[in-house]
Length: 176
Figure 1: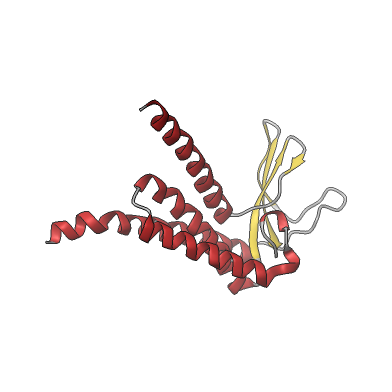
Figure 2: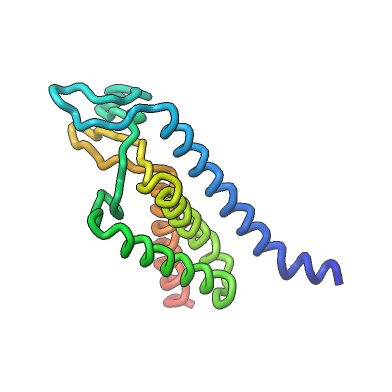
C-alpha cells in the first residue's frame, strides 16, 4: 500500500516542491531588491539608479535596478489593475485544475509548474506591494530591454518548454 501511494503521488509531490522552490526564489529576490535597492528612475542625462553586474560584455550591459510594474508584461493594462488581478487568478486556478486533475503527462507538468509559480509570484507581489517588483535590466547592443524579474523568467521558460514539447510531440506522432 505504501509503495502504491509513493508511486502515485511522488510526481505530484515533486511538482509541488519544484513550484515552492521557484516561488521561494522569486519571493526572496524581489524582497531583497525591494528593501535594498532604490526605485528605478528613467535615465536622465545618462545616469540611472542601478547597480551594474557587468558592463559592455560583448556589447551587453546587465544591471540590477528596482522598477515598479502596475500592469502585465511591459506595463500593459496598468490602468486596469483589479481586472488584471482577477484574470491572473482565474488563469492560475484554471492551470492548477488542469495540471492536477486533468493532465496525465509529466512532460506537460513541469512547464505548467514553471508558469503557475511565476504567475503566483507576480500575484503575491500585488498583495504585498501593490505592484509587481521588477529588477533585472539588460541593455542589448543599445536596445533597452524592459525590466523583468525571476517570476517572468519562470513564465518564459515554461512557455518555451511547452512550445518545444508541443513541436516535438507533434513530430513524433506524425512519424509514428
